[in-house]
Image 1 (cartoon, rainbow, N blue to C red):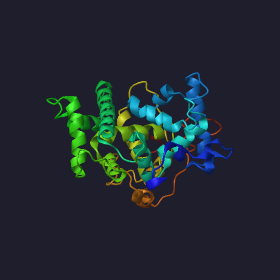
Image 2: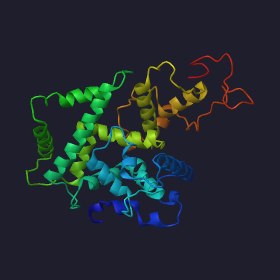
Image 3: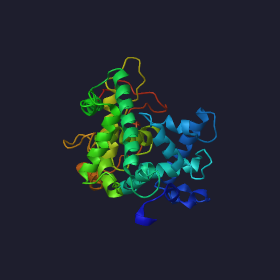
Length: 327
């Protein structure tokens, strides 16, 4: 395609309708494909469907996606445009969403907001995008404000900083100001369009897009259970979840891990490294740095064999010590 930009149809590929194994043309291996097929079946079964409709896709995101983004995303997943997403379409879409190189993801999002498919974003398209991202941000801030306080959250701070100057400014006018600032950043005139390269810079760094990126990662890594692309992202995902869920609540169901496995995993992702932060994005150069931090191979699936009594499936050994034997 011209300028290397991909339409949703080209991203999903014609192979989607073939009998080929999905692992042969997605970024998932055979085991991951089987796991994702199970997730898909469970999700549609809970909605009393055999395929996924837009509402069912929508409930997988937190904060919820604004209608415009959800509608465009659903259409991108729905390869044959029959109004439903089947299992193969779901897995192919997730391959782009969660496992594609960053540049390909950016092209995917760019096409999502390029309504007229002219390979650039007009001022009107930018305004629609900004309004959608702002709506998503506001919903996230509202959700955080009504959740029981479990730990300090950086999201609330982001909300305050983004809203600080909006009290005396009409919201519609604020959206215009955000678009204008993007145009000024790239030295564009009112009638100019935003190119893909300019969009990539803006979309990667704009505070207003923060909750969008978080929602996509959460949907892929937490709701669906796709393993992050590299050790850094894996560690960031777990650290963020731990901060959200701590401290434990009385009578809350918890899971224990063997301290031996946990320490191996922490070294693998560089969990205790001073430079490690849940908020840092993992660049392509970071993809292997998690391993180099601890010089460790991936620990493999969770192994609690050292804390489970022999000849039992889930009975813990007696006299176990927290932190020393389990976490």
